[in-house]
Length: 183
Image (cartoon, rainbow, N blue to C red; front, side, top):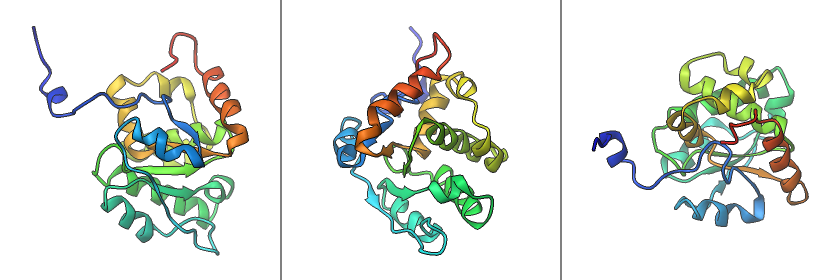
């Protein structure tokens, strides 16, 4: 029998790409607790940008806690808010603190969730984050190997959506997955 040494230091299995990814904000602590991750800390947005400052996010991540952040302005705009979101994803991708202490962005729909996951992959691999946010490819994301999909969850730990929309967003995520790759 062969044992991968990488797996020995990893501890229990982490959630796959879309497993327990989406939750209502009120349920985030319980969802993250299933994976032994701490409850997220809300990070206040800058009133001018609509997104939190990088310093505020980095401080929360450095404490080993997920950062609950607003991201909608960064997904909608191609200006300072968009650049701030790019930098936030890069910071989370390279914070090196491990699962449970990444970003917990607020999103409105499955398209925004796929955009954030694609942006996380681009941030991790040094690719164009803004292009990934604009043109996510769910098939490519789900086609990543299991370790890579789990690593994306180091950056986007969970996604908060309005409570009334959780079932729709989860269903839309599953519906946009290529058959045979449900994660």
